[in-house]
Amino acid sequence: MSGAGAARIAVIIAKVGPYHVARMRAVGALVGSNALLVLEVARESREYTWTPVESSGFRRRTLVAEEYEALSSRALKALMTAALEEEQPEAVAVNGWGFPEARAALAWCRRRSRVSVLMSDSQERDLPRLLFKETAKRAILQDVDAALVGGYRHVAYLEQLGLDRARVVTGYDVVDNDYFQQGADRARAEAGLRQRMGLPARYLVLPTRFVPKKNLLRLLDAFAMYRRRLGDEAWDLVVIGDGPERPRVEARRQALGLEGVVHLVGFKQYPDLPAYYGLASGFILPSVSDQWGLVVNEAMACGLPVLVSHACGASELVRDGENGFRFDPFSLADMAHAMAELTREGPRLVGMGQAARAVATELSPATFAAALARAVDLGKAHHAGRRRALLPNPALWF
Image (cartoon, rainbow, N blue to C red; front, side, top):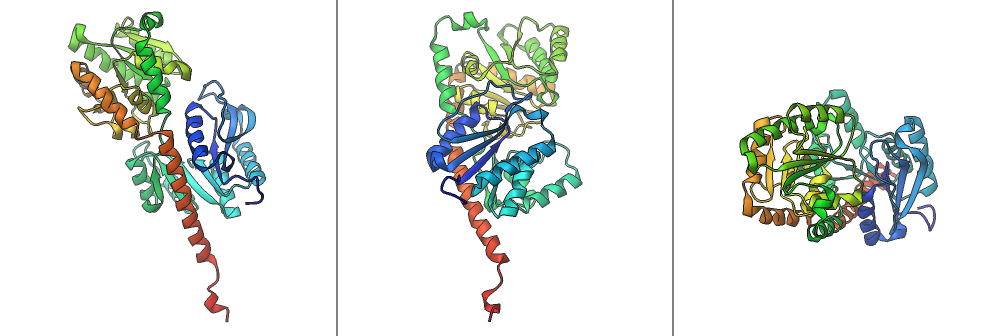
């Protein structure tokens, strides 16, 4: 450390959102608010359109006010390098290896001999893996001291890329469980709220971005199959969000005759979400590629049974028949079957929701804080060992 005011841990985040704040408060409570610095690259983002959030319990420094996507790779690297030079943290936690600011931070740690922690929820199955890119990742991981990841698939992928499993900690993908649980419970208790929000009596809920990997067109096809199979027993579907695929989703909904039962309610800010979860009967996430899927955590914290695609990292939270069901996102029949199975659970739905909530409580902001602290400690031990290995052998000095 270069001075008494320097942070012990710097965490790099492209744009701070509500779930980041919950995590960072927990870290600040564990290590001390003055020991944690959050380096937020930009205050705005086209992809993540949350209203900018305030924060407390940790120090936060925003590097630029403009949109993250408007910044060039060179500008991102320069901004991050300059900030780290000024702040001089002892350890740096970076979000993945694919972003310019993350690569710049890892390079800075290497030059300045500081501890680096990779935060990642990449799975081997996320994308087709190209040899030259995997080789580049292996090279990057040579300079990583420890990693914090979501679950067992993410551990396996880093191990496959050459990172020692003993230096990988799970507990990365968490949400503010208390916020969602309490908000959902309030919504259920508020008389007349369902009518005021214009929501159906029974529905599956999905907060998502309207992009191809979220698999919304196939979801509509499977939902139409499910409706034909169950008739009047079938629930509605409420989709929260927006994005470039919306015109195609609207066209498919109309072609399938689902306008009255598939409700596209648009993008909603964070404070609105607990009510949509709380008034739902279940949750579905049909992605064909999703590194984790934090909406699964949110739904489970709200006490909803969940239907989750096998492709999502968060599918490891699903206990089939206990708190929900998993399904093949490429199979319309399998997806429709999962929806039908959940609908037919009837009286067991409450118990399944309680089981989901119990699983969610195991992944809290406090879980993240303890996991990050553990990763930093493992990183320090590894870093110290590397430094000792680079020193000349004292026995050769005489």
